[in-house]
Image (cartoon, rainbow, N blue to C red; front, side, top):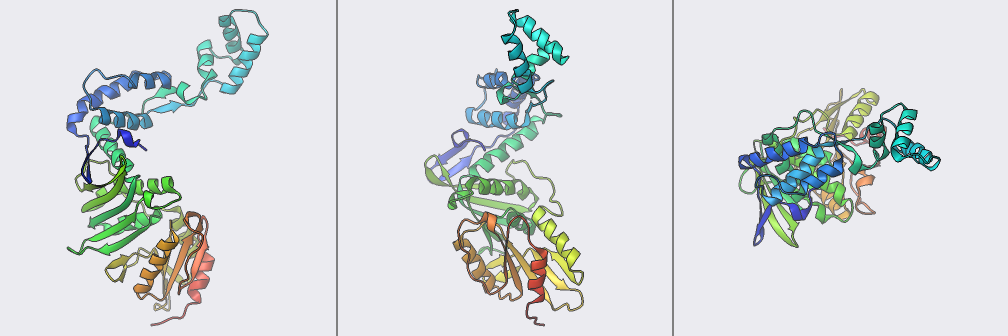
Length: 388
């Protein structure tokens, strides 16, 4: 995550504005990339020392710091050495302790015992220290236009990592975004906008929970690049920046790097449950992403619909709860009750709980860790009272 003090953000009163990189920043980005490419094969600390100095051209300070950190993630540190570093040090130090010859001769003799060159031995001696590893540029190296989008994405993600609350207004392709938020286990509620029919996704931010803050923040940040697949979005967040709580907004058209198209299954948990259930329940259909439930002005998207192949009136909705607090779980169950759904199974992830106790529900509640027991879900479904 980019550090707060390096973010290109301007604060005016209670509002903060992100200073996005754009085409005007591509010239100095090209200079920065060329400078980093010059250090191909050299030690990482040498590159780090060079990046601490000014470029040969003008570059905005905060933008350049963010760009340097993002590029440092793309440039890798080569872990491969001719011989294991620990073994190289042990043999060389033993040889030096047992010999009075000059250091160059001891190094050459030790390298010969490994059947490598003295230079390869020198590279291996400290090869397990991150700052001593050799620099390797990405292939192919991203063009400045792509780097602009990647850096902007990292900046917005770093801002959201400090959010206490996020409102995400969606138009078109809202359902995949809601599904993705649920797959990442985010604490979220979907409601209908008062102005129009566009749904609004209310998400609790990392600063609103007391445990798993970093993990939760990363889950929220992972949602951001997928917004490009919406016809339109408007994100508003309350964020703790520079000692105060400010409002930040990001809308469609913001120059951030988009995610790849969503796959059929974004969650191994969902994929495994679907596979296990279809294997043990040949009399049931498993339908992903069924129609949403309406609870007042809120829409709830269940994860699965289980429908009997012969008795079609036997329909069971499955709702999976990821990150949760006792208060969130109570509100979640209350909204589910408000939807009027009776044939419902709630699966709760105990690993992501931010509390010690859940709340009683009028439907089967299945607690799980790592994976959902498909047999337990099937027993719960078959034991339900059915209504036409």
